[in-house]
Length: 276
Image (cartoon, rainbow, N blue to C red; front, side, top):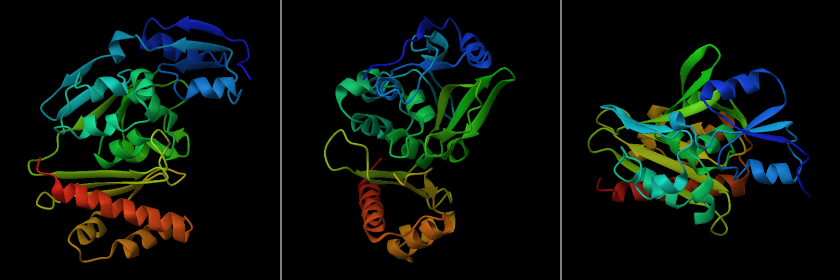
């Protein structure tokens, strides 16, 4: 199957893209096209026009600040993997990027496109949630910043308004001595995860965080007190996750729960072994 006929244009600015979305001409934005392309071919989406934002300079920049790094939405996974973008985490972003699908996908896929698509099993969705990142959205009313914990609101659903564009991602610099672990289960390389977890350990600053992904919905972030108990081995991972699943209204099916318990254990082991 092939896409229905559509008009193709290259955007000249972010405001140009917002205008196309606002005009209601059944327009869709495209950058890397690694998710949208297959959806077009399967006719799951049938836009009247595609507006290419992949080369816009304003979303192709990466700027470092004292607090972290602002990564333009059109930066590719491969550019992060190859170190073309400053990594405020000291290598955690590069490692995550290198584990996304295959190199061909990473060469084209963009960080902003992945987050805006909001596939529950995608790497950047859980990684950016675990790192406490935020996204900047631009629309007719200007720009606004949204924490990742509030950005993904459901499977393939985000806080983006119909006429807004995700323009950048802010990744904060971890505090000194912070440790990090990310682990995902997939049956073979290139598949989306069946279970994933991130662990950020900084007990001294009270900033420890455990997040669960690949749940068929937005990630679950364990409360800080529960995360501290799990990290300090004062609470079993199984108990913590069983309670978290129930609180999120997710059925604690044995197989799914077991995979996520394993994901947390593996992420904890990686974090404890991290010397960054």
